[in-house]
Length: 164
Image (cartoon, rainbow, N blue to C red; front, side, top):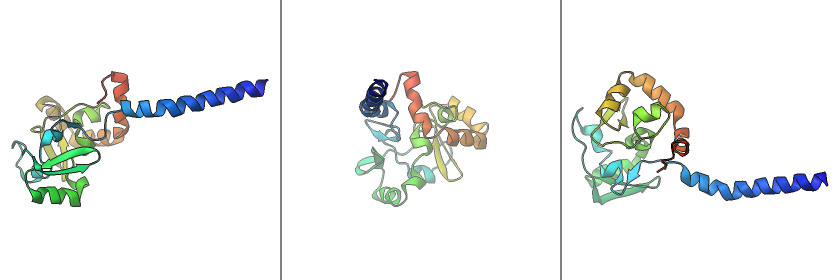
């Protein structure tokens, strides 16, 4: 009798895992922050590397788009799109385009394309100028904390109740 009870419990646990795993994976934030305009709200991630600090981001075009990691990336030129295709990790923003300040504090937040910084040849985006200023007070420390939390932070949205 005891063996049958344990077998039923194991079977029930396995069934819960099988049925809940897809639901739980849907609940996490996607790996790339994207909206209806695309990754980085439709801006050209390659163009940031030719801008001066404080410059506005460059809008991408549907004519020069590319699908990568489940998001639609848009570029101002075919040349920028091709550079991205060749080495997307070089040009994609860190932390999937989520707010670098937020990730360094173990949560996710959307970003504004015009609140950006290149540090050690990597693109970082933030939610607003205030978050960017706080993040920039200790960039190496902020990056170390963010790297520690990424990508596990993507599942923290369940606790906040606002995934996606």
